[in-house]
Length: 337
Image (tube, rainbow, N blue to C red):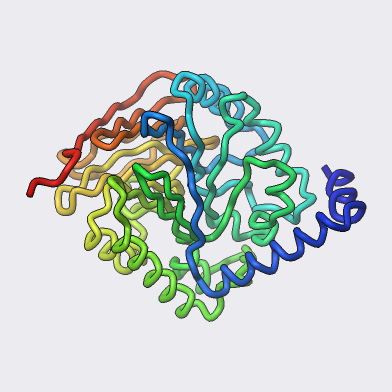
């Protein structure tokens, strides 16, 4: 990969200039906290299908390769349109730069099935912030592997659904007050309070303006979870009220290394954790209301989503491709007058 990047950046002056311009544009988007938008065309019948994986980048270890294989099988069966990554893309400390071989070892050479050669929409996790954040955001990696798209916060409009990807790591106080031996890359975040304030305003505005049938928010950290990390207090206090006020349908996260479905009685929001992409935490589960907890699985796996204008189907799979949990809901095609 190193030699490829050298020739890419230096031997092709025109492309190098485009990458430079793209990088500057990306920095401007990040610094102003504006939510960049992308278009994702649904299938001809208007439906959409995708997979969700999180907490995966371990160079194939801890069953990452086995999960990737099963993703390829299910991806082919469902004819998926794209993949969502809920963050912690590269362990333990993100990428060291755009030429880090971990990008190949944990991504390009792992998710090799033809069904997974679709767009990957990725957010950053706390482990990603321990490395060179700008590397994961770099257009160089996007040009190297066309599937890769990672930004801090952004929107994907797929007509039948709209996806709001939120950079959750800067919300968490302990990464700033108690970093321990970890060094975080906070470029583009400071002043932190302003960054978070702008992001919350942008998310709120985007949700209010959305006319999508389904509103789905994606972030790395949990809002509701019975896993090791539990609820993320900063998100419960700052982000959740905005999600509730705008009647979102689902919040999808990683961070806890498990597969989980919590159905909120208070708000009707479905909270899905897909953090079983590699290393899982066996036996780690905290008490939760039985009427809300629909699934808790302390092993590796992933989830699939199929949706139309009127219906959505969620399925969780384990490392062997076995179905762990199914959930379905429907909406009226038109609102009653």
